[in-house]
Each structure stands twice: as structure tokens, then as C-alpha cells.
Image (cartoon, rainbow, N blue to C red):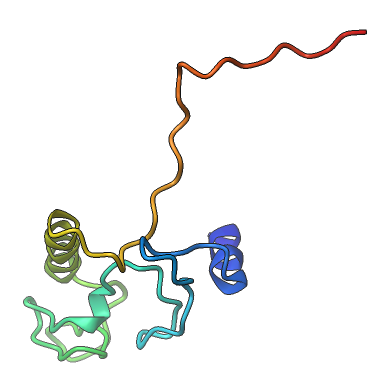
Length: 106
């Protein structure tokens, strides 16, 4: 996670349009191109966007509720289907037909 954070802060990671990722996010982290669950209202506890989930007792939940995480994932699947250019650029796939040159042993 530390390496990923370093890549975000350095501007090395880009979205599909070529814009760097890593801007500050409303949740206190860095924007990685995917939908931040805290940017959505929680369907489980009804906490508004930008606020952490709450337990029934009213105390802050230790973790984000699963329905909120699933809602963010569903939005990202729809963005992927629609070709959203603000999603992270994919890592290049290794082409198995590329020849790997042997090491020069001279």
C-alpha cells in the first residue's frame, strides 16, 4: 500500500485520458480513479456522502459498510462499460508472443 501511495503522490499513475491521479480525496486519501465509497450515501446506515459509517449505537463503525463498498464497485463497473476516461489506465499486459532475449553470457 505504501508503494501504491508513493506512485499516486508522484503523479506516475494516470487515468485513461492521460491525466495524473493522486489528487486529494474527500475521504482524506488520494484519488486513485475509482469511486470512493465515502463519496456515496451509505445504504446501510444512511450516513451522507463524506461521512464515515455509523453503528446502530451511533458510534463510528470500524469499517465502511459492505453495501456502500458494493455500491461504489457497481458504479465503477458501469463506468468501465461506458468507457469512462477518468478510470485508471490499465497496466500493460505482457505479450506472450514477445521473445525474451537470453542473457549474454560472454
